[in-house]
Length: 153
Length: 252
Image (cartoon, rainbow over all chains, first blue to last red; front, side):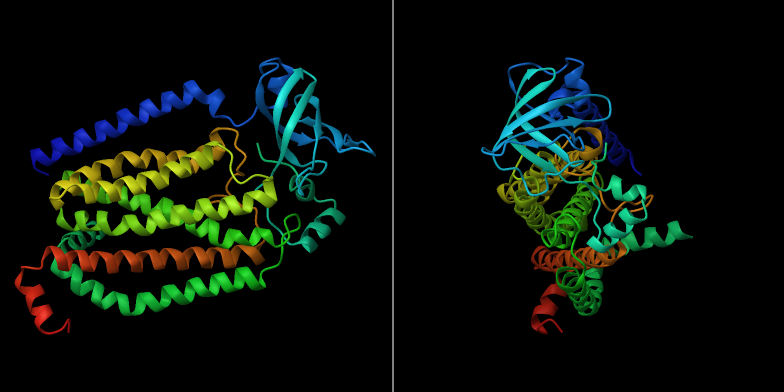
């Protein structure tokens, strides 16, 4: 390689490495804002701001979904295994909403144990299988059947 | 030995004239193979693969969304390599490639965003969220558009290639962000289903049509790049003897 090309190569690589580091630092500094939502662990620990618009995400706790018979009000608990709190929502839930499902809710945190949601989104995981396979896994008590409902960390 | 062969190919394909004859030999059989592979994967996936246990039939958009997204990402990596060769070694064929790779990649990035958003509505309950994966994918589309625009705005083709090449190189950082955004930060978008290492979390009955669709689309991308690069070579070498002969003999 002649020296002119070598110089150009070094220059280009230096620009790339420099920009890479800059972007990496930016990501590191903004990591809290780049995350789409706060986890229940952060909410319980008081790291999430109260009374401001924000998103929380976690798994719907089994048996915690309570629907009001007359209105669209629904409350449920969400968890990440390290903390949990109650979410209140008034409206139509997405089709994929169910117990054990990962969800993301947009709204305001009233206290570290209660969240008022304006919008509830279902978080889909990366598992795909036919219904028969899911039935078979469930019958066999395979851990994959449970995991398939959860969301990946 | 392998290095020697690669080096020889690099120099041979670096010659516009050699590339032109090489692509005339490859295209007649690569084109039907690409189309048949893509069609097989799509028909199998869209019509015959089983439905999903949670999403029913709406998951079938995966057979378009994942091949398009992976094609857009790989295309950008190729664009970055062409950019590096064009900027550092000033190789003419790399400049041609820089121009040939971008349009199809931009189209695939757009398809990925559109199909993802159409799938997001019934699955997540929203068309769009500014999460890291979706935002970085939108930036990828803008990078493609930027590379194309920069090539068109500078009249002198060699200068245009250097500017666009530098943008292409810098944009490679974004490809890394797109790929790992779902692992590094909390996103609405799920993690990768197909894993290079370890077990993929998709049933084989769905995985094979998906892999075939991906392969088919990648091959189709290659066909598109070859066709675009050929016409670009012909244009750039229009004053050379061999292109003149080609025109006189009607491309035979």
